[in-house]
Amino acid sequence: MKLRKREHGAKAIRVISLPALCFFAMAARAAWADGPEATPSIFAPASTPASNILDLSWFVLAITGGIFVSVGGLLAYAVIRYRARATDDDSEPPQIYGSTQVELAWTVIPILIVVVLFLTTARIIFAIQDAPKPQVALDVTVVGHQYWWEFRYPKLGIVTANELHVPVSTRLEPKPTFLHLLSADVDHSFWVPQLAGKTDLIPNHPNDTWIDPYHTGVYVGQCAQFCGVEHAKMLLRVYVDTPEEFDAWVKQQQRPGEQDASVAAGRHVFETEACTNCHRITGTAAAGTFGPDLTHLASRTTIASGAARNTAENLHAWIEDPDHFKPGALMPAMQLNEEQINELVAYLNTLH
Image (cartoon, rainbow, N blue to C red; front, top):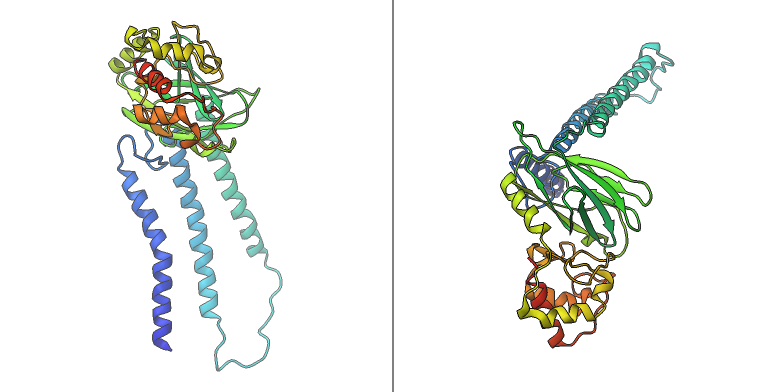
């Protein structure tokens, strides 16, 4: 019996300690992380808003952890110190009613803790929301759609989708990016954990946020507000470029769509089918706004809002049946034959 109890206790300790060890291992790893992570991580901030939020989180965790240890310790002491013993009689112990000191302690101390947490949280909120916008800041309008992201650069004349490009920001040359958030249909939420906190995109209620990433690389995020069937696959990528890389990307995006004569058949398919009702390609008659702008589709790493890599095979499968990657996606299957799809894919792959 004792052996079984010992085994049961050891198993319980393993079950309890395993998640704790995993948590502290991730936290320790992230504490020294530098730059983008392969998966979204709040423990590896790479932008001022994300750093402020993480610092606040650790502060709140320290306060609440201290409360947990204090209350748990007192409870454990009371349970052990005043446990029933074989030598105890059955008489009722002395009853003490009312203690001004104790009542003041359990009233004043929680109030002070709440006030400290409130003031600290308010300071971080206002520091992020009321940050001054420098003249060198990059302006980007973010529009949430079911189920993809539209990025507009009003001062640069660029419209792209799902992959946001911004310049790196350093202490010597700060270059923050200010995001104006809109929704085209339902509630969405813009969240790139390493760069900033969640900010909702609400119909007819514009919101704003900003980032100043100080490491180059690709930062991943997604919609953090349930917005429909394919909410989980409404992914996004933020490419933080060096100034030279960003300038080169801007020049490329400002060019009209490529018109290669060798893929004229694919362009004809695009312009004569229903593609033009939803998509836009500069330099052609296509001017749709319901779906992503495809002017420079081939320059993107992913398609379907990050659901698949941008390869000829995946593009073919997406056009043939969008539900293959995103069941419930609003793009319909175009009912094209194999030859038409191949011609269309060949054309789209020239749009760099």
